[in-house]
Image (tube, rainbow, N blue to C red; front, side):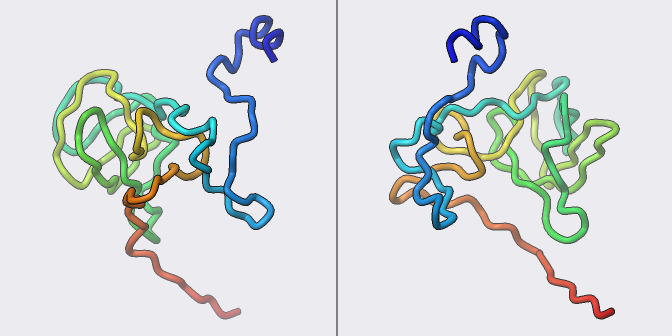
Length: 147
């Protein structure tokens, strides 16, 4: 791997190791406490400028959803603000409309809530005993369509 990294100058932040899933054979892909993927993730995107209000322009809005009309939007963190919910995403304008007013600086990190010093690599954050899980999605509905 070292030769590849030196020659390609790619993947310098990749973790090349067993991810330490709890029980992948049974479909449990949560991370064990000794996983090398804990706190090794990076910033999803950044703000494209400073501002305040409910509409934040980001470098890349494609990571987020507003629920697509069937659920609620993603919970995100912008800079040092508390978690806030997305109510609308304009992918062409790279803007996120939020449920509450916030303030941000140019280049602030924008991403999903995490615990620890950085996001974990993987679909779920590792939760130590006593940690509260992230808020579950709300407002989902099941629609049955008959032929």
